[in-house]
Image (tube, rainbow, N blue to C red):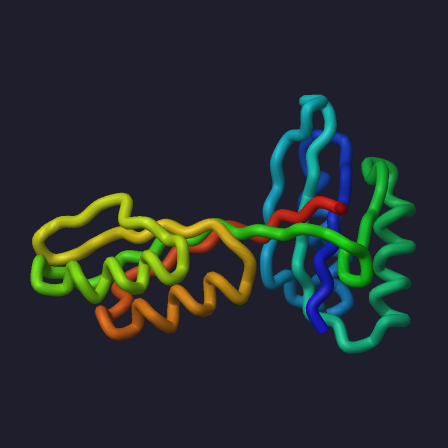
Length: 157
């Protein structure tokens, strides 16, 4: 099961490495990671998506995160009401004759073309996992040349 975890930490050198180290030491891959300052520049918010089948081990990791001196609060959004989003940029093969088909995909998913050149287009979308998957499925017909995704961010309702 995928878990979205937010960790408020003091904005200090090495904190990210210590937090990520807790996950890697237990054999958990961080599937997504986004880190930024909050309204208070001395505090950063780390949002991680991790795959963990065993709830007991995940609880242990959260307890150990809370023991780190630079950690302020740990929130597991998995079972809480929350909104999450991710940003995606996709470069696809493109020509003028593809415009109607591409516009249909973009209109259906809410994505937008941020650049259209003679041989490629760059598509941008911000959304949830289902919407991003739908966009990627629709863009396969054009040939995906490059794909860049931000880490998932989340906020409680």
